[in-house]
Structures are given as structure tokens and as C-alpha cells.
Amino acid sequence: MNVLLNELHAYHHEVAGKINRIKALLKKLKYESASGDDCKLLFKMLESLHGETEQHHHENEELIRRALLTTEAPIHPRVKDIERDHEAFGRIAGQLKMLEDSTQETSAIVAAVDNFIMKYYNHMEAEENIFFPMADKWLSDIQWNEIKCHWH
Image (cartoon, rainbow, N blue to C red; front, top):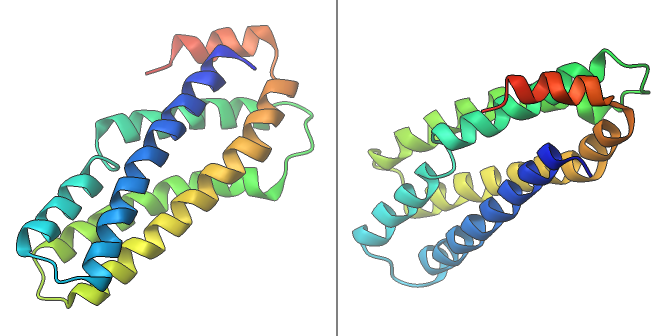
């Protein structure tokens, strides 16, 4: 697999570890008596999934996706959805941030974060099982070099 795709894959692995820690905290919030500090920790952990590193990761994926669209590859519908997913994650990040200062019940916060995690995992799965293999197969060395010039 191309070195840039390997970098994206490694980032997904790192994010999956963060999500597993978030899921453990969600379980505590859902089934045990949680403190205000637990909620603060949850939002701090979520913030790590919406920062500059995440934005650059998505921008890098978009470089590859746009290059792939210029090939004669049979573009899977899920690849076309990736851009919308990236935009949606920005909106979801804003919604989750608003929950931090809200008076919502813990159960509503947990449900919103669970929903985000489900969408994030579906997104990563589509990238790793459909998008990345397509890009690896269809992009030329010239295209990869062009992508690398704009890589974050």
C-alpha cells in the first residue's frame, strides 16, 4: 500500500484507540454514577477528535479522493460520500461542543456521543475497505507525487 495511505491508516488506528477510551468512559457515564469531572473528561477526549490534526487528516483524504475521481476507476458510491462525511463531522463537532455547556441529561449526551462514534466507525470502515484500496489500485505514481506536494 502507498506510504500516504499507510499514514492515514496509522491515524485511523490511533483514533480507534481514543474512541475505545471514550467508549469506556461512556459506559461509566451510562451505568455508574458519574461526576462532573467525568463529563469534562469526556468532552476533552472528544476535542482530540476534532482538532487541527483531524482537519489535516480529512484534507489529506480529500486530496486522494479528488485525484481518484479523475481516474477511470469505477467510483463506489461510498467514496462519493466521504466528502459529505467530512463536512458532517465538522457540524457534529460543533453540536457536541454545545452539549458541553448545556443542561442536557447525561443520557442525552451519551446518546449523541454514541451516535457520533457509530458514524465515525462506519466512515473509517468505508475508507479502509473501499476508498484506500481503490486509490492504491488506480492512482499513478505521478498522481501520488502530486498529492504528496500538498500533503499536511
